[in-house]
Length: 253
Image 1 (cartoon, rainbow, N blue to C red):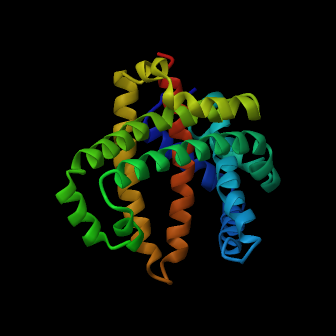
Image 2: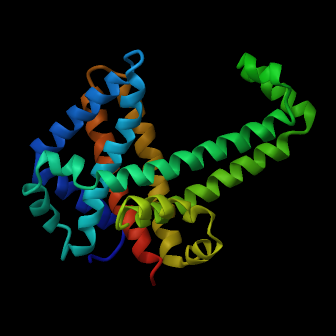
């Protein structure tokens, strides 16, 4: 495998996109269609679940090719022989297993967050959705400690997530992908992330993703620049997929 780094991850993602532009544009078109179908009453819930699973399936397809690459340029050959159906369906079982695990974890985190907030802020204020009233209630109720805890917990999970995603991407089947997602709660896994290689890789990645998200969100606000934003978001997902596998590999050192 190529030497894990953010520079190599960007190069690999670029070569996959350039290696088969038609494939990537078709994938973007399908994802956009599914995103629009999420707004359809009743059946929209089906597409609401289909979208993240299919998006993850693309990342898994790309990520699983990374360990066998002799160099970044070889990813163009992978893209060249990839069919659209392969991109979406070859690893759909892993995508579904990983999504289910992360969905349950998100629900647990949301329940914890709401529990901490409701213990400090009255439910009537929360239900109004008035941010100023919520902040005023928090400042007078002493809930700042709860907010700091939630923020730190979110940052910690964000630090662990790339490595966990890498484990899910390289899992063997649905059950394994589902179980791998819960490595977020494994102290032994936490210990493995305390390495210089993993820390540097993830810190640089987080900065790139943050600024990328800001830029693409800004571009998406313009109808003329929306296509550029959509391509950028897709490219960012390819880059993320490579980083996830790199993160997982760095834990083995």
